Image: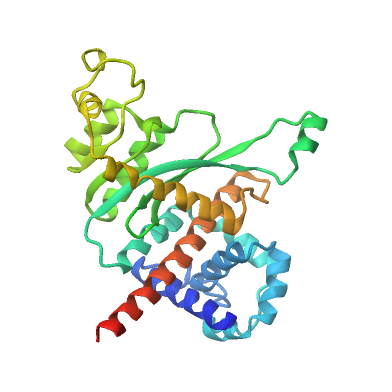
Length: 297
């Protein structure tokens, strides 16, 4: 049963890679031992299993059905996966993440945005306090389709800046996948500029409550922020909680810290972690969809 689940997950990833038009080889003169598709799927499974490169390769020797499905003649060395993760273009990975939603029947995105911090080490709070080490966090911001709870775009940064600076790039990337219908966010993204971006440029409805509820409407700046003060649809806004659910599931399934030490590899690790979540979520969705179709027939 466990092996069949891995094959289902791998089949979902293959469909996504085809939709994203990822080439099988990055260069015509490569050694052609492993394809780009095989590498990407294996790195996503590494995050799914929560193992180091060495332990994942050891695990892969036992995953017979997965190796047969991926047509792996031999298990790659763990350094092969490390080098590929450092070499692959981040833009290509973002394109793959944005392609997950294309396998659903959705035509317009009900988008939400939220952020969460990941620890850059697995050291305990007791150790860091006693050693006087300053805790460092990596901020992961995701834009997601809330009805299916699938991440569509992401942004990773380290500087302790306000979350609202990530709103524009995430929403623009999401709108490049398919048109937006509704965008919801919490008060941390309250900005007249964000409302204008969604309503006037992306042609969608924005539901972002204004901060400082005690400030009267006549003292609130911006016509869209004034509208939020006068009232908004609470049912639509409460869908924002699903974004927090996505981040919570990612942390519970794959951990709330990264194991890599270099900035580039930390970014790759979180990107493949979001990819592993989407792979899991979309597989669950497809299984449910097929079962519902059978019940109807």
